[in-house]
Image (cartoon, rainbow, N blue to C red; front, top):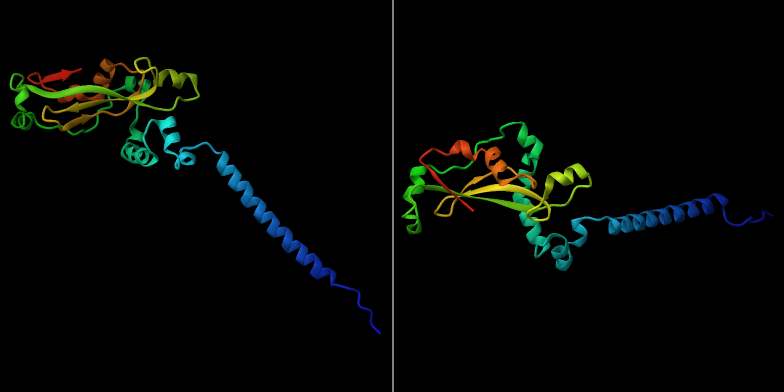
Length: 195
């Protein structure tokens, strides 16, 4: 008579191995899930408009993403103060001919018919870099936080006719006007309004 020695040790080891593999898979999923929860990023707060407002001042994640989609193409052309001081960085930009501006000149500008463009610098709040040198470049004394700064030109009838590259927030309005390339577009008979 043959004795039954119980379950096959090879199949018991294979079953235990399969169970351990499944346990490892589940633990890896848990670790990945916990890691994702601990990462600090804007996507972490996408479900909370309150958190989005706190960190970005945008009313919602959707509005923030729409804004980012508009400015993201310009990110590679942002210029630091040092880069701007090294040379003229003008590119081809939108510019409405003076004749066309006069054709659409609003009634409110009848006493200023040679006004071609209204200029103003604007600053966008940005995250402060960890490097003290970079912090000093993007820190705006006017806004008292880190910013990126750009020069906007608007025709009297409201059309945007000039948008500069973005510069570090520490650049002065005078310097950004020189570096932006707007001066090359102006002629002696053109009047410019500024804030």
